[in-house]
Length: 153
Image (cartoon, rainbow, N blue to C red; front, side, top):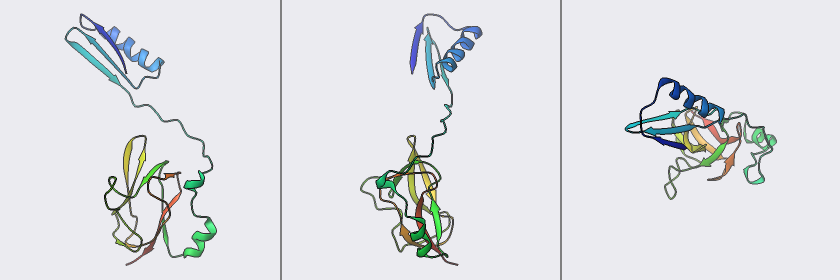
């Protein structure tokens, strides 16, 4: 965050110049003070598309052949984004779910941290957790299988 201090207020032209300055230099936030007047310019910084890379060895998803052998009737919950998988709401807390747990549609299964945002991942179905495919605090890729769920009525 860049800061600039002055002793008087801002004109509309100056504010426009500050916005252009923030855009030119790709600043997500610019704060300017002038006497009692203070403005903060914030903008959403678009995240560039990341090339899909091969998963790290520790983050390798279960091979497709093993998923098929696990059962055609199982529902796979996949990572909706790249990030870090967390099985519990905080360190030392009990995990959201364990293998064998009966879950409801919409129940929180895990958290994926992406760009310092904690995203709760919910179940798409009612059923039983057949398999958890990743370890806590492991990096995950977009589309990587996280859970296998045996659907139940």
